[in-house]
Length: 250
Ligand code: CA
Image 1 (cartoon, rainbow, N blue to C red):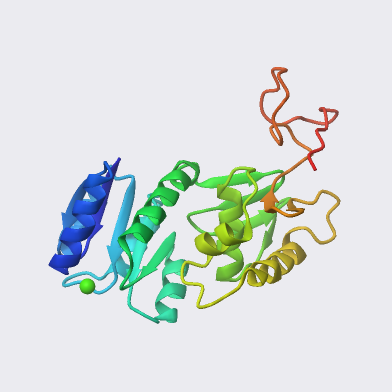
Image 2: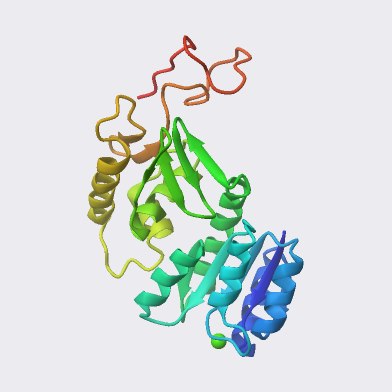
């Protein structure tokens, strides 16, 4: 795994690089925005860690040009403390996650791992669950071909659910992934946003995609198509068409 780190603060950059190298990643470190943009453009990275305030080009501009080129590389932004606007801006520009300075290295490592796991999904660019389509680059969401307008938080929640590829996520995990800086939000925040997301994604649809798994959490899954819950050993390639076997997963 090859990571690009763009960070101008030397002590912090050193710490991040050493820590990530010890965790087994190869790290290229750029100490200004121009160098960072150049390396990012060359590509070949599995993840980009981008500081916002940099000499030369800033982190926003680098993030924006990667997404403008439809480069799906996962991007983790390092934002200034309490800069809520920064995080919203990052989401809109296509960053995948944020870490607010100062942060604990363990936290960074956890985010890096999660993003690298999601990276495999992101590379597909468009995640499909039933007739729901999530374009992870343009952040457009549609169901049955009609576009659904989501707020940044609703989108983050939906993509978090989609990225887990049919696995159940508990509220704490959802909170940690979709709300990188929860500001004291409790797990009931997740319930509220799930409720809002359901109204947009599932209301008036016969096939529901967001499922509550009692005592465990939530899962985004099309129980009416193949691959929902495993256990089928028949060569069921791709999506079951009309008349395909229905597999009910509770
Ligand atoms: Ca900086």
